[in-house]
Image (cartoon, rainbow, N blue to C red):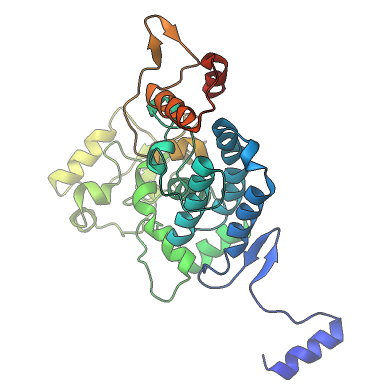
Length: 349
């Protein structure tokens, strides 16, 4: 629209002329790539929170609790909406690391334990915080889950209509002329692939070659493009293409691979016209998407560390590494209690 047309519409309806990005519910609304400038409110909010706390009166355990309950809650809200740039993630984690060890927004140099170790569960030698980049990835994988469950949102409808265009999510390429966020989501398919499983009902929403419904997994990955040519079935065909009623109706097997596919289905898996197709998220015991369970699947796990303080003595399942780091920190500051047991209980389960 021309500037004069914009002014006329604004005068006619009483609107104010604005420019993007604008803030809505505390986050920026943008049309292009998420820039560091657009995410400045996140850094500012975290910094202001830390500055408002009387840090010199907080113990190490108190600062840890504030990071876990307040600062990570702020970042969780942004992580559930945006794919955060690496520079912003590094900046946020640097601020939290400095506050944890020094009690202020400063350089985190001199930290007693690396941030990667701190961001491990307590039973694996950490302090129970979460690494922001893995948590952000787990949050964004939820959008992939919504695409398969067809949640009914406007975003899902737009993606299905204009971006996927009746093609499998796993098969579409990464176009150069699409949005930055959609490209990022497509690049996360490697992580989402082993987590999405389809339970066969009618078969009208499952892609025959690309979705994971067969005991051997996605057939296109197990056998390659050759299997599509051998079967003479379109690459974007739905599973209902080989279903008749509650039985399989495969074309005659013209290759050993097609025969293997059909044999694997005998006595194990049958369609059911009375049932809708279902999607299961394998990272979660419930089968539905859970951010915490997805994060636990994605993160790099370490071996569990025993929390024994001595023969037959255990305090709150506290990992030995965490205990030693914490005690060493308190000794250096000269604030350790003469009776350390009540102080250490704060790290208990």
